Length: 268
Image 1 (tube, rainbow, N blue to C red):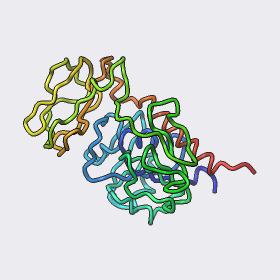
Image 2 (image 1 turned 60 degrees about the vertical axis):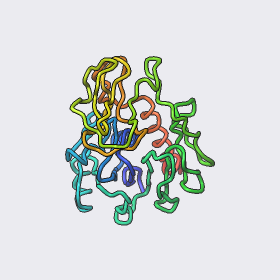
Image 3 (image 1 turned 180 degrees about the vertical axis):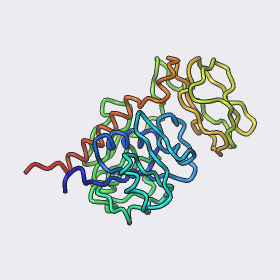
Image 4 (image 1 turned 30 degrees about the vertical axis):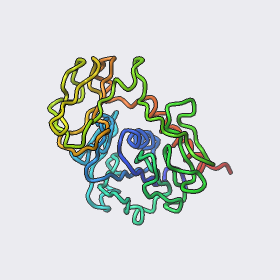
């Protein structure tokens, strides 16, 4: 089998899964993405899972399209687009028979991926053990090892510390202080100042802590738990960053591509 014939199933169309889908699509692989019925990605400007709500979603020139039937997968590939299915259990794998399954759910634990799901199975970050749960683990922590292919053992533990931007880390991120439905009239790309109210959870205001641009924001009307991430402010204030794949996720995607080539690009 040639590399161009490989079929790759990605579980999770959030920011990280989308960066992987983007890179693999441009590398000429056939990609299919599965998602839950109500994705809660906050980095929606770079997340293909927004196609669940809008039918299509484009990230840096690559378009994903929500489909409702397995038979539409091949047609979507012919259009040079990525098919995305609402399929929380990824049952499409039994029909599609992918060569590679990538768990990009980023739950910090294994939600059900098994090493026998495909000839080659990749897990991202904590929660997977290479050569046990999956064939390979990709390091996702923002460390010197980010993007590293791990063939034995586990990734680094989750630190729970948001990525640092402009010397700011946790201050950039807005979290829910209670359980409730998130409501907002703000939009990704809006310029905000410290103290501005960007939404409400259960009537409690959600305020920006710093000046900058709303780079990420949860979709209006979704039920969230206390402690959930609702959005983030980028202090650099550059609106174009809202639709740009981040260096960390590009690095993780590069690690996934490396792992696939290590497995399938065999020398004669």
